[in-house]
Amino acid sequence: MDLKEKIREAGIVGAGGAGFPAHVKIDAEVEYVIANGAECEPLIHKDGELMERFAEEVVEGLKLVMAATGAPNGIIGIKEKKASAVEALRQATSTTEIKIHLLDDYYPAGDEVMLVYEATGRLIPPGGIPLNIGIVVNNVESLYNIANATQNIPVISKFLTVTGVVKQPMSFVAPIGISLKEAIEIAGGATINDYAVLTDGAMMGRLEQNIEAPITKTMSGIIVLPAEHHLVERKGRPAEIMNRIGKSACDQCRLCTDRCHRYLLGYDVQPHNVMRSLGYSDLDADYWRRWAYLCCECGLCSLYSCPEELYPKEACEVSRRIFREKDIQWKGDDTQPKPHIMQEYRRTPLKLLVRHLGLTEYDRPAPFVEIDYSPRQVRLPLSQHIGAPAEPVVRVGEKVRKGQVVAEIPRGQLGARIHASIDGTIKNIGSEILID
Ligand code: SF4
Ligand code: SF4
Image (cartoon, rainbow, N blue to C red; front, top):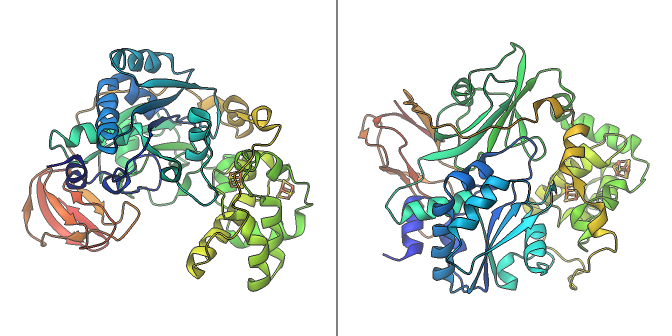
């Protein structure tokens, strides 16, 4: 069985973002494979811990993808500050040609477009993907999972960081499908009663109201904050209010655009223009929305750049969603982007960002801890990836074993398999499979 099939069978999806099925991504011939270990979300440490503890597996996964895609070049992008992980990777790559590219500590160093530019000097064409310039990018956890797939180990667990107001901030491997509440309890529980939970980071993550929501294949971490924290208040604001204050208070100062890393790389992303869409009805708004098309929704403009604490990122997010719904494709300037003269000097240092977000007191290590946790039940969403939801292949009442396939990729569609993460009985099947 070839690597693509092994990856498909193991149900691997991009572990560091939207969850693009990994078997589709490697079905190409490229020049470079880049391991994305940039990990730039404030307070999240799971990739650093993974690279330090499992450097051999990450490098093995990278070598496998290089062989499968015929890539002569392999690069690992990692922040220089993660000295122990860098050292572990240096040892694991010592007999190979794989290069380690050290990154400065800024946000968002992990954006694929940014990382590709940093590591190779190449810029992905506007509206394109790394493949267009002969590159495949995989998150380091995906590469770890790919190494496991060759040992017939499917994706049934997830590296996570749990931090903030918890007794013991830590990174660990959690069974997929346990609840946020269980993950927080593994980290010793919240140290205050009135707390709120952000999943997937302070910048790109969201406020999760349902503490029973399950851990999925793409989740990177849980940040527990006091319910009255300013970031919680900002993320919890209803969309109508974001729009109303944006419409009336945006003075078009352009700071959101001038500090946007994609704009600085030469892409036609202009959130200050997108803000104008808030004042127009649908068709006229589309004119202004087009400056959102190449936004990666990193959140820098809303949570750092805008002096009035408005929501340009959210305006971009809505614009991009509307374009998807209307099936409007990129029609902007598709000439080769040319980085802004200030590109290198307008990066946002992570320390400054952490301070701006009011997170300095929670900016602590979250070291890897081996846990021995046997959940009583798990909930496995059928849609944990880009593409069609997986189709259940089990029935209610059926007994399943850990690692068994419980949902398959619908025939002929983009998707990923789901496996049972515990031994148990199927109790319910809806948009999730409940195993008890
Ligand atoms: S930074 Fe804020 S106020 Fe200035 S243009 Fe952007 S959204 Fe408007
Ligand atoms: S969220 Fe804002 S800063 Fe980030 S890419 Fe989009 S427009 Fe630029």
